[in-house]
Length: 309
Image (cartoon, helix red, strand yellow):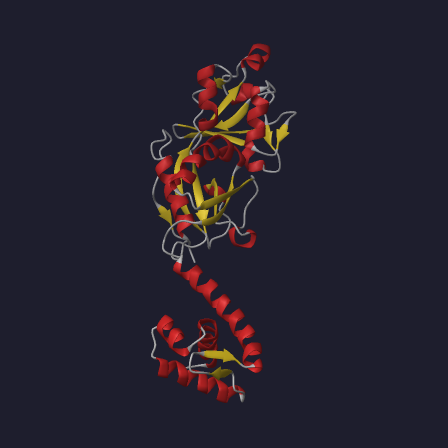
């Protein structure tokens, strides 16, 4: 038995006040415990216990050593409790990043259900449209568009397909009319996403013919959510995810512009570091997202994309 194990036994003996009581608490025989205490005393070259007929008390040297042994024993118990709690139950702080638009309109309203299902999980949500480095920034998972996956060592699981639509507020259409095609769109104020030219290239697939239009206008926002608010305010025509615009189409707050516009769908995914040793809290969150949006009209997928190494 190594010295650290002997120190743990010694701390137990001092706390129990007798070798017999300590032996019973550890499931050992008194002779085995007495032997280990003797080996520890030989190792430190000091008598550590005063032995009497009714029990033991530490010598001065034993008391000094006990304080160190007790601190080690306490750390051991903390570590043991941590390991024993790793029983597959989702628990602890879950750090999530999400694109602003999806986070506000879809994820945040869904979180009460997730947290009710997983009462021992604490959620920390960061809404951002920038590229996220999961490991460097300490996130457990990130919800984003598939094209935002920049790191090949991350895993992704598809949540849903998302198509984009063109829309504007009634007040804008009343002032400027509605364009019938991309040629007429050039005369309109188109709302842009700042810092990302690719998202301002509006493409449409009509049969085998692809049309492209570079959105131009006097307003840009740093997230799709900002552009959405600007469209509601009547500033211009926006290209938005259908899940954001659908309810506003029904209430009349937004008008569907060029409904024949048919861009290729994009995928909304959840990124995570490694599925092999995935923490229960992260796995529960990923599975929840797939279940939550499984009936979405934009048709999710359960397929996991394995990183190419």
